[in-house]
Amino acid sequence: MSEIKDITDELVKFRNERDWEQFHNSKDLALAISIEASELNELFLWKKADDVNLEKLKEELADVFAYAFLLAEKNNLDVKTIVLDKIKANGEKYPVDKAKEC
Image 1 (cartoon, rainbow, N blue to C red):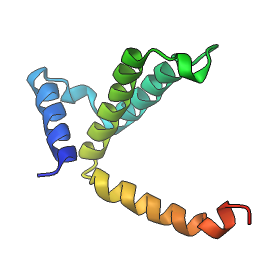
Image 2 (cartoon, rainbow, N blue to C red):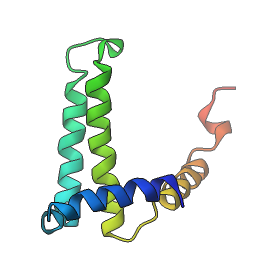
Image 3 (tube, rainbow, N blue to C red):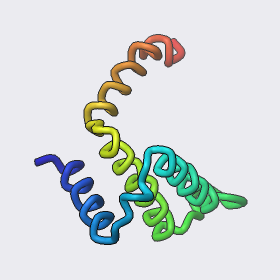
């Protein structure tokens, strides 16, 4: 079993034990990702990049990942596949020889 599936299974179990699936439609999960990403950004506001509180960074990044995994699960998307497909598409869109100065 993949680690991503293990994480998703734990998130679904946590959600279901609390009867929160009723709130986890695609729209609200996408909004939650955006809100959590804003909270992640706030950690860096008015600071040098290296001055971030690592514990808070871990918490907010985990929230972003959690909602993203739940959104993928809600839409029957395999996280590994969609990320690898996107890397491949980006490789075609931005080939190395055009990305680096010669």
